[in-house]
Amino acid sequence: WYQRRVRGELVLGMPISQAISILRAQCREIKDIHLCYCDYDPLAMDVILNLTEDGIRLVFDPISQRLKIIEVYNLEKVKLKYCGVHFNSPTVSPTNDQIEMSFGATHPGVFDPANQQFILNFRGLSFFFPSNDKLEHNYSHGLGSLQFSNGPPVVSKLCIYMGNTLSETKAPPLPISCYQSKCYCEKVELVKGDGGQISGVKIELYGESGSPTKQNDVRQSTLVQEIKFGDSCQDVMSCLGAPCKIYYKDEDKMKIHSKSPEKQLEKEESDYFYNYFTLGVDILFDGKTHTVTKLVLHNNYPGHYDFNIYYRAYFELELELDPDTKCCVTSTTKWDKVEEIIGEHYSKPVVLNRRSSTNATNPFGPTFCYGFNSVIVEVMPNNNYIASVTIYK
Image (cartoon, rainbow, N blue to C red):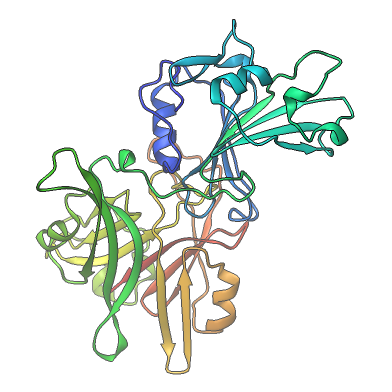
């Protein structure tokens, strides 16, 4: 939708990571972008990218993290077209007559007395007209039937969304144009072996696939794959494809907490991660045996050190602490609820303070890691939401 000499389109349903990548690539053209979110409850409010110099807000659903609303709140800073014809530019004013001429007839609209504005609604598109005139009782025949003391009303804001009404809109599914030949995570669940021990995870994936009979007929396809401890690199790549990146560990700062003396010895071969950013998953391989030893699921919360590196992994983990104590941990669960269920089954937290090798500052502060039943839960202390879950053998 929004181009302004920008390579790439911002479309409804786009993940926030893709939107940020497009804007970051055009840093010379698009400047002064503000990321707005609720630090104390990141799921209570939408996540917003505010392009202050362009008069545009990109509103993302806090759970799916996909683009829900495109709001243009300063029309003087942009040019707008519909079907190749400008309805807003330095020479074309977006009056009510211009909107009706460009978009055609629609319902009379809605008068909002609290904000003294008219809202003209099309499917997936709303125009807001400010007015200081007391016209509520005379508005039954639409804007065109009214006489305004200050001339015809001009659009002050417009919103693009999916559905019939702005108040009930939801973020649409990921568009095919945003797949970019990659796979994405629908859901992650635990796989348990004999005795109820965790043996790995089951990942429900979706991606694009072409029709064998029709050219350029791209559609969504889904599949379910299992990654288990002890799987080789080849096993993982045959299930998930090539990783987005491979990271070799220089050192393991958590090994001091290991109960096994052998694990504290220096290793000749470096362990390494397969990073699957679009799945929100990291897979750790033993440097000697080249088999899976650990899995990390990321939640991609704003206000966390790793935000915008990973997509959100939508996990639903059924944990059994003992025959009488079971706990379900999801990507939206707060640690308070987990703590109420597991009681004394978890250890005291370990403080984790992430830093880059090139930048020792961490503006978000440390996180707390709680361990129980072959699982480490990383918690953000300012809101008690779960930042990541590590599952190990």
